[in-house]
Amino acid sequence: MTSYAGLWRQVEGRLNAAYGLLRADAPEVATSVEPTVRDWLEHNELGLALDTLLDVAGDARSMVRRRFWEELLVAALRMGLERQFLRIADRITDLEPPVFAPVGLHMCVYCDFNGAIESDRYSLDSVGTALDFARARRIPVSQQTLTLYDYDSADDGGPTWLMAEAVILEHEPLGLVAQVNPLSFRSTAR
Image (cartoon, rainbow, N blue to C red):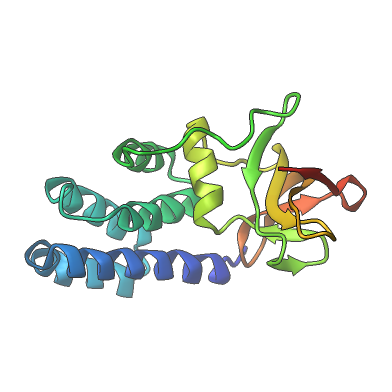
């Protein structure tokens, strides 16, 4: 049996963060669903908790800040819930254009290269990553090839992009991760 305990903890953290933002921005809306959301989270029904937050926030859309939607977006991405992921992406009205156009056939996706989880493996649990997948209107799948990028600086302090080729793999405790080809790292001026 596969265990994704690390992934579920990450998703639960994102859902709790989103609920906290809802409570701060629209307290009456949050109070109306608190018992339901707490019950879903206590019973590890993370998809149902996401659906509840997504549905109730639709009514309070003008009251909640963008960060609420970003937290839900990452949670949906990490759970692989494409329908909810696209619904949330549609609610982020000021979604900027992608930083990079596809390189060849590869989609370009943000990755924090400072956050390696193992040698040459990186988490896909960041808002920047989720936003790039939202711009492309797709969720990651195992064996998908990507070009990853991160903000960096040259030895002289000038801004650069750090880039590398990667393949998405299943990682038992954390779900999908990016396996980087270490020979593909390169830096280019911004």
